Amino acid sequence: MASTTDSKIILITGANKGIGFATARHLGRAGHTVLLGARDPHRGETAAATLVQDGLDARYLHLDVTDPTTVDDAALHIADEFGHLDALINNAAITGDRGRPPSGLPTGVLREIYETNVLGVVTTTNTMLPLLRRAAAGRIANVSSGLGTIAILADPDSPLRDYARLLGYNSSKAALNAITLVYAAELTGTTITVNAVSPGFCATDLNNHTGVLTADEGGAHIAHQIDFSPASPHGVFLSDQGGTYPW
Ligand code: NDP
Image (cartoon, rainbow, N blue to C red):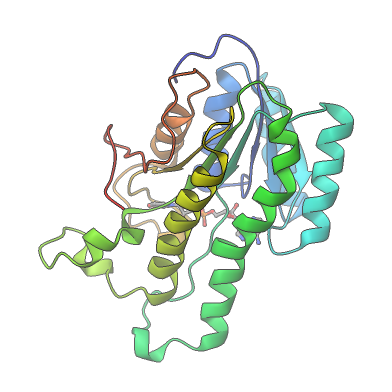
């Protein structure tokens, strides 16, 4: 991780398992206070307790990105306890279209995917933005995927070609990429940076553990991409391989 000399307050959505949990562990080990957003209290409390047992400053926050009331309550809690937020990692996401061709995906499933992967990010970002503005150097990291990159979806020789037909997931991540750039444009000239970040292809529940990296490796990639230094990139899609992805 780049240039963190002091402890930061970092909120990660969907942090009770998978890459979000691993990201929390890596950032906690770096000395930061990690707020584990989770929609299920038992899963969230258990995850936070695991990190606390490891000696990390980890707290569970009830946060369902599709339920604005929980997002509002989480922001009030952060304001009361810390007064500001240094980083928001929009990690929570779902997929519901594996094994279904685009032409066979019910609109209701598509809507559910968008509620979480797209609208949930907007709700959480807008609600947390006042707290990020109070930080010395606020950071917004949207966990995206190469499957949201139009250039990759358009490439018949892409190694990701086998996954090109995920209508809901891929288009939701493409929307997330656009959302990232739109927020970056609004926040250019402020102390807040906005980027899309990438964990790499990790074996998690999301993909029935077909990924080639571990969730821990994915979390390490995300943690590494959170840069609190003045040299932080802004408005780019950071690759887990280093450098950037095309949009
Ligand atoms: P997992 O399915 O393992 O974890 C997803 C997390 O999101 C869970 O904690 C889940 O909670 C949470 N979540 C889902 N819906 C909501 C909601 N409405 N509110 C709050 N939390 C919610 O997936 P991954 O760890 O693989 O994915 C994490 C991120 O990484 C996602 O954004 C994904 O798109 C991205 N990504 C993953 C890749 C991979 O190879 N795995 C590759 C590229 C990107 P619960 O336990 O309650 O379901």
